[in-house]
Image (tube, rainbow, N blue to C red; front, side, top):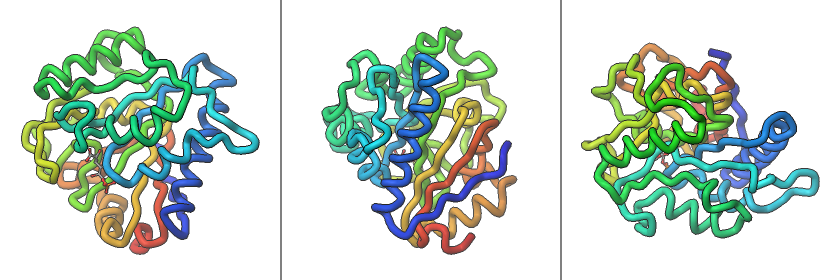
Length: 248
Ligand code: 6PG
């Protein structure tokens, strides 16, 4: 794993603008070398402002949305128009404001029960990458965005997971999440996350500072901090505001 990069910003707005500029530049760099750019969106509230900014084409680089494919790193088991749905947030602030073909948005069908939704999503990912689901090495997304909660969970991977670290599964059901909203979830696994070309955490605020310090200081503690299981073969970038980075 390459050494984690910490990109620190004075506040939430600056972080969101910095992350949006990074994604634009990475997408355009990649699309000069390949036909498609696979971007995995994270859930939670932190990326809302980033998603609002992504449709705004900056002076030197707009994103070529028809060549971008959007995925979701996790989802709550709820209808796609439900307030709990990560897709619903992305739809409102991003998807409805960009010219992305419908078939390029790969939604987790989490209105179904978690096991079926997880199996279906692994099949969707397999079709996109033309690879048999749950085979190793997992496919390599161009960029995976992740959030981090105070308990160290990321995506919907919670402390003391029952999932063995060496599991080949790409996507898993999470039936008893240990943090609100306490609805069943569907989540990427560490194996799938760690095969990405770039993984970027976004975290804001003083209340995240202790867990960020723990994740940085105790990478062995994967079982208590799932975020510490994120050790990608590619780049790992932490987009942090000064408060969240204050204990590093
Ligand atoms: C989810 C998320 C989860 C989230 C973190 C941070 O579905 O809940 O994917 O991993 O990213 O809990 O959430 P906030 O950004 O709201 O702090």
